[in-house]
Every structure is written in structure tokens, then in C-alpha cells.
Amino acid sequence: MELNERSREIFRRIVESYLATGEPVGSRNLSRILPMSLSPASIRNVMSDLEVAGLLFSPHTSAGRLPTEAGLRFFVDALLQVGDVTSEDRSRIEAEVRASGQQKNTDAMLAEASSLLSGLSRGAGVVATTKSAARLKHLEFVRLDAGRALVVLVSEDGTVENRIVDLPPGLPATALVEASNYLSARIRDRTLGELVAEVESERARAEAELDSLTARLVESGLASWGGRGDDRQLIVRGQANLLEDLRAMEDLERIRLLFEDLETKKDVIDLLARAEDGEGVRIFIGSENKLFSLSGSSLIAAPFRDASHKIVGVVGVIGPTRLNYARIVPMVDYTARVVSRLLEGR
Image (cartoon, rainbow, N blue to C red; front, side):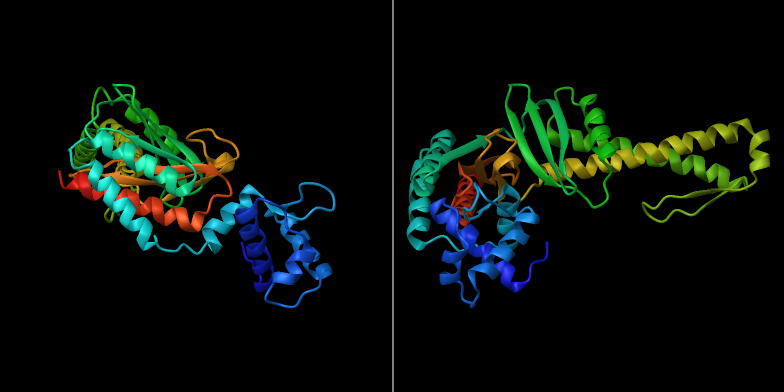
């Protein structure tokens, strides 16, 4: 969303005031604190435009404005200036998490990380973990929006882990359904890594079969091969001859099915790789927070890794939507990195 400098500054001030006080902001108060000279009437016009855009709302008639969930998301994605962890918080996180992990008790270390984040953020600390070699009984991809999906991993021991992954541009919605169905039929007590290896193996076998079939049709002069890398294309020639060659017709249908199969496997492998390698701090605001179904709250979470550099859980903070994102985001990220360093050293 594009905002001019004036609209951007007014919107930023409203959100920052809300994060600090939780109260709506009126045009008269804004006119006193803005770095530019604007009348309350001009500010009200801008606020009205921001409301039409879905970024602000008025809790009641003649009141000031508050940011909507969409407004908070826009602020976090486009305007938030994330600072660094203060040296005091950094020292405390490092010392307390490291001290709790000296006994080689991972559970105690994670509990301390959760408690520490709760105290520092004034929110609820949360840690979700899973075993990197856990045997799966269910895996599902759920689209959140055009560019992201939620991966639901259910282990044999009942552990449920959710990961947010970025989707490749242009991936159709049906690809997620096909991947979920394809994997559900093959999980059979496998780990995520074993699933990746199996799909890769099946893809290699399908490619070998495809190469053999296309070579026969091309050599017989019934088709030409225009494939380059993964941009596979078989150009059919001599259609009349195909009608007389039943085997060629069967080969052509088999090639069509292999093309579809390889495309599905390609999507599956890509999605599995993204599920294994999710990165960075994730922020869920209000109703976006499907993970815990806490309407009116926010979740800030970051993944941590074990000695094999596999993601084995997330650590984070749950609190009201007016969390101090600028302070808590780097705090959660730093805590996750400290936990990862300790686990990687084991």
C-alpha cells in the first residue's frame, strides 16, 4: 500500500500512540505532535482516507482513531523500525538461558527461556518443541495467503508442530491439496527427512521412465523433444501415424501422466524443503493468530535449531495486539539464537 509522506506520518503517530497507551488519538492531539504544520481539519481528512483504506477505525462517533488489524500488519511490515536488544537484556538472556542449560537438561533450558521472555516482555512466554527425528502420522499444508502456508506436522507421539513457510510465486492452491494428499498416503511412520528422500527417489524413477519413453517417440520420428532442464516439452509430430501405432499412443498417454506426476513431485519436494528450512521471526496479529486461536492477541515467534541445524521448535511471546513490537521482535530473535547455539553445542 502506498501512502504519501503526510499520510504515512499521521498513520505512524496514531499506531505508536496506540501501542503506548491503547487509547484512540484525535486530530487535535495529532496537530500538536506532528513535525509538520497541519490543521485538525486537514488531519481529519487524512484519517478519513486511512479509515476508507481499512487501516484505521473509530471506536465510536466523534472519537479518535485506532489501527485495525490490517493497519497493525501494515505498520509491522512497512513502518516498524526494529531496534537491537539492549546490552542489559542481552546479558540477562545469555546468562540465564546458558545457566539453565549447563546441566544438559534441554527442557529446563527451554522453560527458563519461556519464563525469561515472559518477564522481559510482560506477555506470556511460549516454547513449542518437537524431535527432529519424530515419526509422523499426518502432514498437511494450509494456505494462509497468496505467499504463505501453514504446515501442520503431527507426530506418532501426538506432538503437533506448526510452521509458517513462504510459497513460491504462482503456486496454485491445488498444489497444496495435492501435496497434502500425496504425502498423507506415504507418511507411514516416516520422518520429514525420510519423506524428502523418498519423494526425490520416486521423482528420479519417473524422470528415467519419461526419458526412455520420449526417446523412443523421438527416434521413431513421431515427436520432437524441446525440453530444457525442468521446462519439459514434447512436441508431437505425425499424428496420423500415432493412430496406427497403439504402443505410441499408450506411450504418449503415459508421458502425459508422467509430466503431471513430476510437476506434483516438484511441488511436494519444494514444500517439504520449505517446511524444513523455515526462517526468521514470525508475527501473527489478532485473527491471523490461527496457531493459538487467540483473537485480539499477537504472537511473535522465532525458530531454534539443534546440533544438526534442523528446526526443532519455536520460542516466542503472546500478548495483546499493542505489544511493543520494536523491542520484543529482536528480543525473541536473540533468545532463539542463544537457544540454538546451546543446542548446537551438544
